[in-house]
Amino acid sequence: MAELMQAHTAELLGDELRDLRAFLDEAFEGEFEDADWEHALGGIHVLVHEGEELVGHVSVVQRRLLHRDLALRTGYVEALAVRSGRRRRGYAGLAMSAAERVIRAAYDLGALSDGTGVEGFYERRGWVRWRGPTFVLAPGGLERTDEDDGGILVLATPSSPQLELAGPIACDWRPGDVW
Image 1 (cartoon, rainbow, N blue to C red):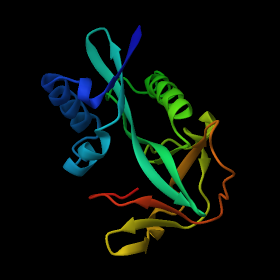
Image 2 (image 1 turned 135 degrees about the horizontal axis):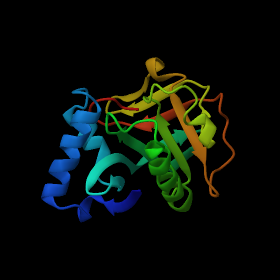
Image 3 (image 1 turned 90 degrees about the vertical axis):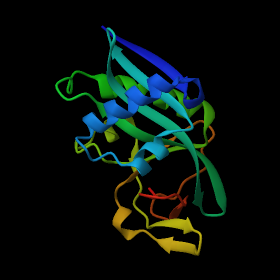
Image 4 (image 1 turned 90 degrees about the horizontal axis):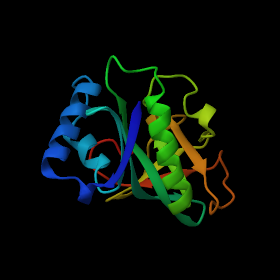
C-alpha cells in the first residue's frame, strides 16, 4: 500500500535529499540535470513510498507568472517522477492529487511544463493547456519562448483571476529550462 509524505525542502534531512536526488536521477534515466534539481527545491515535496521504498515524487514551488497586468503567485509543478518498474500503478496520480491540494489552497494559479509523455495525463485531472504565446522575464527584459508554446498547462484555483488562455503569459527567469 502506498503512503504519502509531504514536507518542505527545509524539513528534509541531508540523507533524504541525497536519496531523493538519486531517485530522480534514476527515474529520469540520466536526463535530470543540476538545474532541474534546483528547480525542484524550495517548496513542498510529495513523496510516495511503498513500504520503505520511495516510488514517486512531485514538488510544488512558488513562481511568479505574468498575465495581462497581473503577477500571479503560482504553484509550479516540478520533478514528477515514478520509479521505473512501478509506473502505471497510480502513483503519479496520487502524488499529483496531493500537489493539487497544495496549489488550490495556497496559490492563485497552478502551472507546469508537460514532460510526462503521457497524452492527456494532466488534462484528465482538470489542467488546461495554455494556447497563447509564452515569454520569460529575463535579465535583459521580456524574451519570447516560442519553443514552449503549447506545452504549458495551468490549473485554476479558488483565487484565480479570469484568464485569457489565448493571451500571452510570461514566467520569471531562472537558469536551465525557464518553463
